[in-house]
Image (cartoon, rainbow, N blue to C red; front, side):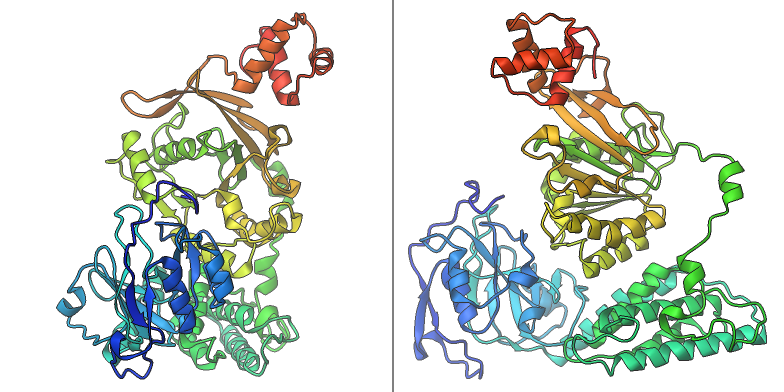
Length: 639
């Protein structure tokens, strides 16, 4: 839904409610009729009221709650900017209120009375009635996770909620401010429960899932590990001496430095479980990692847990029985033992050149082989998401994909910034897959804004992906997952370096969906660097008149698989794409065939002569379309 989607009709607002112009931050509990009051009715009125009281807000599409912007970056209290989001009547958009950015924890009570039933006492505080329950705003600077310890209550700590005055496009219900007092302080029992939920969410499951086998170490190796740990902890303490924005002699600031050193401790623990157990590594890290008001205890804990997740069981490489003082020199941080061997493994060229070649291993035939990075482009609404979803559903359940023989089920992480959960539900039902075992499919629909060309976001999604150990990651649509300019090559180089390359090193395949540019003959939209790293590039075209979709391979590193697959789109009894021998002509090719026939151009003419004749009559065309039209007229069949 866009900002002007006519389907999201705003409700009528004939009257305005009256609220205090300034929120009662002293909690004197004065009501609106006892203070300077202001009438509020539209989303713009309420958004400006929040900003006037010091709370940052950001725009949302009308009737929606999913952000289309980097809300953590655009949230503001600037009244002129806020007013620009809305139409002249104060509508045309919803708005969101961030939690942590405003020093808030917001409890989203999905059912009235859920908090009381759980024994949670909140007291009077700023409260908004939603379609299902209430948003209860509370003050806290502590960094909690989104995990909730209560049934029917969501915790909005690192996210946001839709602000009062906004409306729900599906139900027409308005988010209504029902208590205009300032947010109360987070009650101590509630804070304790959230701390426990955060700790359980962030650490325990990761530790329990990973088995770390004990290995007998020699005295020299034990001493080596102890010295290496001491070096890492010394580096951690040194990070705390850095000022804001400063970096150490290895180029590390607080953010990258703490993660790298946490990963090093995990590797050392994995190599010496009995000498340095993982629980002790975490305690040492939390005791020495730097922190301040912004880089909080929870941030520090999250760094260690991300390292646990990403490192897994990888162990530091220990020397044999050398003197531990001579083995690797400086044992701290980036030059710690095992860093070079782990990071730069040497190929066994004898095995590579004379061993058995790896067989073709298709995850989604004919698009994606194991470990490969692949792009699929099409014009908007050509059906690429639908096509890929069908292939994924079949692959995760071990069914044939587009008629290709069935293989073992695979695991897939599908990150979708285009389609809402309701769209997914409708599509899965249309494919007759609602009762299939989809436990190997991890589907993320409309995630918070992700910029995978930015290190922090790329690291976060990589950590999530690695925790699920998939064979394939699908990005739908890739241009939604970058922050840089689409026409800037540095955007796509950063995406490759920060997100795609680490996954490729893990052997995880990536299929990224994308849109063609305005001139389809020039391929995908944006910089040419977009296609510079892919192992295969495919283009999807759709001919609705013939009920056909065609997959055309535009580039390939190894030439595996067919260059063209034509698929018959069937809807009875369920939606399915079936290989077809029918000729595929899209609308542009059909128009060129008709034009060539009408001009009396001989069928034996090649592309060059035919193209010159078309140009002389003012007919415009793309080269690929003309090639297809000439071949079709010569009886060449499908392309």
